[in-house]
Amino acid sequence: MTKRAMGQLTHLLEVERAALLRGDFETVGALIPEKESLSTQFEDAGAADLRLLAAALAHNSTLFAAAREGVGAVLATLNQQRAARTTLSSYDSSGKATQISQPTRGTERHF
Image (cartoon, rainbow, N blue to C red; front, side):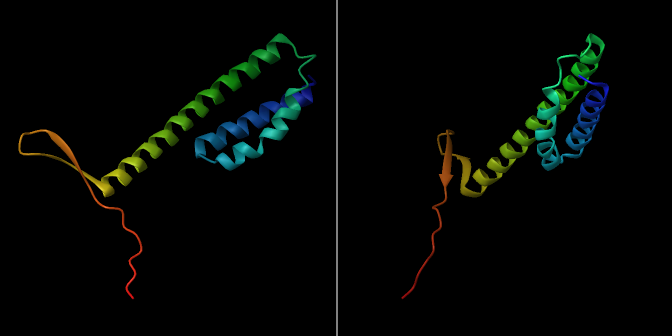
């Protein structure tokens, strides 16, 4: 890997890290083709260069995992809110939990 390619890949990883911290997934996706192109140039890379890249990749990987967990939490919250609008949890006279569902509303037509 040439020093120029190493510098470009390091810069791309920094841009990716900043985009992940901002939640800018569009930018992260736009970086993929260039990262793939640069990643094919590792034949002549030295151990020190590879260690630096590995550290940057590990850091970004941690950010990707956190972003995935955050998106999952948002989806779970949205699903809970949707369920709260359609069902009501309550207890019957014997103390057992029960769900009271609202009928789905369709278009009502009067002729």
